[in-house]
Length: 113
Image (cartoon, rainbow, N blue to C red; front, side):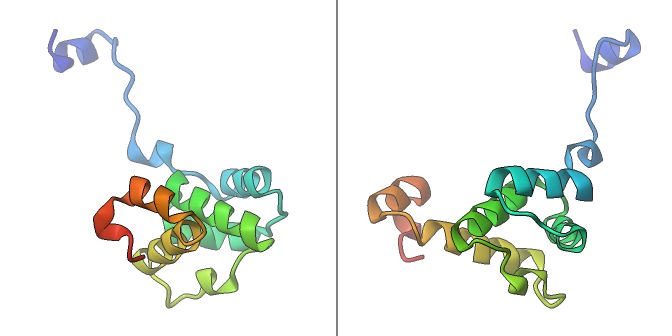
């Protein structure tokens, strides 16, 4: 049955992009639970803004926090854009993995990270 027919019958649940993004309070709770570190609301808000609330970016930040024991203040710098933030977090996480894991996760083209 075509999607428009299912919509007309009320048999489709649609999720909008905004509904998948974490709010500041959800992000703070997630980061605290995952990293085990208390995070202040302004830092959580800045991370939500930088990651646009997407869980992948928040998870990478939490992994970094778990390893460092706190949130790297440079992540909250207004000059750091989303691309730089994601690059930093990927490098932060993957640099701690054994070469064999990096080769598997990233493939041969990315082992120089």
